[in-house]
Length: 362
Image (cartoon, rainbow, N blue to C red):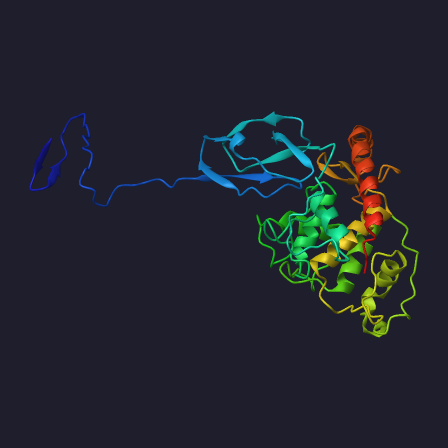
């Protein structure tokens, strides 16, 4: 074999050619660095405080004991690899995008009765409602010392509250709203509430997750939620006693009649409903409290296996179209009753204390 002047002369017989490579340590270009794939671990807290997702490369070990959510009135018992809460895990190796699920136990004596909010006083009409939703983990403060009772809540927040009340069930379908980003804290809640007819979007593809909620929208949301749970919607309140009843949008009239007749919505001073006014956090807390007490809901294991609010008086099959829910729901109901008893006793005692204080409701 001959190489001369950078030219190769083919030999007349077979030859063996060996390639020899040397590592380029100059730091220059020309080398190939394969892309690194990152996987995401998501934490589904099922009613507890949010835990940000973490990322890592293939086979990265994540120690789950470092991630502890909180939920007032509950004790965190660990992370599980499945939504059914059957396989408890203390750590995972990232081999794909994964989700772990929080397990909870209802405390026997939820809440201490202490009010941490400087902007909520016992003299306020909403005091009992705010303390109820706070002590039961339905709503949190806007800070450690503020509840912001006159502030607003968004549609995304309200969808998340109702979704968590049902045990944070997994949506059956995919998100169809272009303004709801996948992976956002409210994404599953919005998808689930929309596919179950509890929330309606704007047009075909908009939801408005950051939009505030009007009082008539709030009535319509609770009306649809009651329908989802299978409750009687025939009760109708008299709207004529309110001076601004003509301001109610047509779509919300039936819902507002039901909400007034069910004592979930009460008028403002001057015999006004203010249907187009923005619902405040205090008003949302009041409706949540009234709804739970009206239907005597208690905390227990929801059909999906996570903690939610259930009706111990009836075997309620949510309108999901999935008949397999029946068996799981029945088992979940039975296993929840013991834990619910202490909570129900506490709620009754709490209501009597509020009545003794003669809290003024609006």
